[in-house]
Structure formats: structure tokens, C-alpha cells
Image (cartoon, rainbow, N blue to C red; front, side):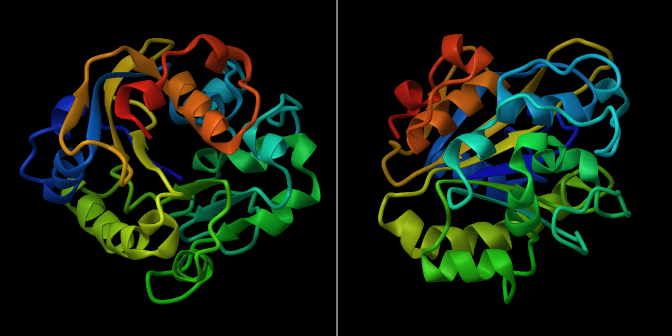
Length: 261
């Protein structure tokens, strides 16, 4: 399970009094201290985490909504795991696989909507998140029916894009408490990766972001200084799902080796 956060460098998260829950997750499980987002702005990073391919070029560098030339036939982890193997849960999305942004929902933070090889899978599996009390994510968590691969996309107010670090930290805490109490996590079948799309800067340059990984098998407080990128995240997700490593994931450093999940 990949939980996406937005536009915040690692130095603003690790040790921050505004992110007590995030820092507790890092202390209870693990954190990557040298994790690099690949480029700017948002969309190319989201696409890289799910395809292993760089999208640091037009039209992707314009954060376009899916459609026209802003669609891709590149292979991706959603396609790899098949129709029954993935779900994307997006907060404030009003319809399944919504391709038009409508504040506070941002399509550019929902990578599944951009892949043409998903076809009808997107309409079935890319769903409104709901709340911790009801809806798609709640039902799958408490029912123990989370898929092999999933993404969680908060809205612009809850992902640190428009709202504060404190707001995002509190919002996430309600979900994490439920997810880690659920049967998938408790049985050791679920790993949660909380990652930021990009940190400070602009243009086609990397930035250091936080990446917190949670699993019952991780030694509490594990900190890794290994160089990781968004391709490392894809590599871990594919390895857990039993899917072949795509493009940049093949040569990326292994999060699983570093954290033992």
C-alpha cells in the first residue's frame, strides 16, 4: 500500500513537532533518510512510482489531467497485477476513475487514470476513498480484502499541498490506526509505504523527501541511509506482488533488503 503525500522535503517531516504521528510511525517501524524524488512537478513523480519510466518532459511536466496526449501506453504495476490485484483510493473523487480535477480532488495525483492499458479496470478499481467510518477503503480494510497493490491519495487539503503538515498528519493518523488494526496488516500480509511526491525545488531536478515504511516484520526504529528513489518504491511493490520489475525498478536499490519486509 502506497500512501502519497505532497510537496514537502524530508527536513520538514523528520523530527518535526507538526508531524507527531508520522514520526511515531518512523520510530515504530522504519524510515529512509536518503530517498530522492526524481523531478518536479507532481505528475511525473507519480507516474515514475508506478511505471519505472521517467515522465520529466512535456506534457507531463505541465501536470495535465488525463486525456489526449496526456495518456500513456507504458506498462505499469496496475496492469501487471491484473484486474483483481489492485485498487486506487482517492479522497474527494466524485466518480470512479475521475479524469477531470475538481478541487480538492487532483487527477494529477491519481496515476492509474493515465494508463491506457487498464481499460475498464480503471472504472472498476479506481474508486472514491470514503471515510474511516464508511466507504471503499474502510470496507476493504476491516474486511481483510485489500488487494496486492493499492494507492491512497488524500485530497489537496489533507496531503500537505494546500493544507498544513499538522492537518495531513492528523488526517492520516485516523486511517493508519484503522489499517494497522485490520486483518491484512495484523497477519503480516500488508506493508505500508508513506511517501512524498517531491520536495523543494523546481524543474527536472531531484529532491530529498521522507519515506516511512510500516510492516510488523520491520525492526522498530530502522533507519536506512541507502540511496533510494521512486523506482525503489516500485521495485518493492512489484517484488511483494510477484510481478517482474519494470524499467528503472530493475536497477534501483531494494527497500525490502534495507527494511526486511
